[in-house]
Length: 114
Length: 114
Image 1 (cartoon, rainbow over the protein chains, first blue to last red):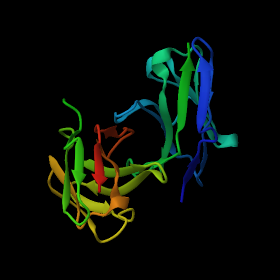
Image 2: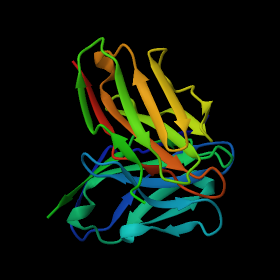
Image 3: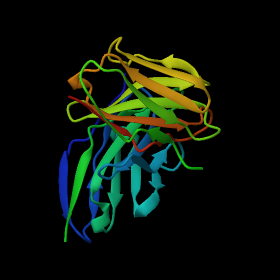
């Protein structure tokens, strides 16, 4: 079975600083990969996804992620964080033939200092 | 489209009572998922429907939980009898089964069993 690890439970960055959230997955083949964001009391919103092709994917709100097969990683980045980015971020995977049966990481809570 | 609609948004019930959570998927989507989010276990997939048929219910915790999808536009998740450890946020999500697509999540139902 696949698994997802987000090593950082909490991250605090200053507004305007760069951000990288880590995600490692365990799966025998290349899965489909996703990053979702959850604001307090809200549902999950998709930031970006990787299915195949270019390993650097662009998402909404200025986020990007890079798939590195050799490292089984799909890290999320943003060059300049805004206060409104404070939220919880989830990395998720699904096997390519399993529809959207997602396995989620434990999440990383991002706090932004003014 | 209004997105995935869940009701109620909040539910408080007494232990032993029956609880029914409802979900209306995005029109045209043929896959529907129920997830549960808790502090201890994070986001877990409970059950997956495709074309109204349950495909994978291996995540349903025990027989007290049941889910139905009588038609393409409605699903329920029922807990009977409810227990305090069922307190969680329950999310419904929908997607297209074919192609490279993502799952869209509802706002969730926060269930508290006292």
